[in-house]
Length: 168
Image 1 (cartoon, rainbow, N blue to C red):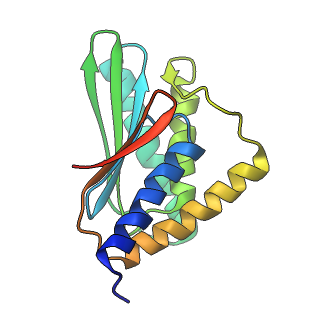
Image 2 (spheres, rainbow, N blue to C red):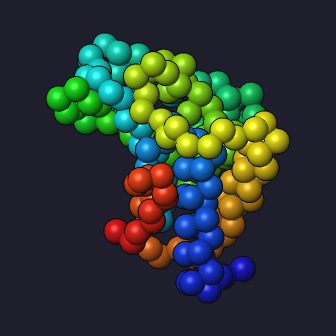
């Protein structure tokens, strides 16, 4: 079923906002038709070895998860940008095969590896029931986004305790 452009954009915006609300460790989310990029900020420079280990752990974790699910993994890309005293990690997944469980897995891997230096939004505490509701919504919205004909590239990030979404 083809969706109206405004409706598909609204669903994508809701997905990006929900990801940032549910996962305070994610600094930004970018959507560009075929992929979703999850950005994490580390408050220190990351060595080449530590980056390679993170990339391998993310890729291996997703491959193992999808093998258990009996599905192909799809596109997985792990990149970084280094700045003085700061590292930006970007995890890229294709929209077609991405699941909410994979988002949780990727965030958990980054949190386990870099919890002490991972810049996370210190906003409201989310209780387990709220987390489960958010995860269900994210799963539904991912499916809606896959079915829609989204033509806009969107970015969502946090600024002063609020989520800002803009068209790239």
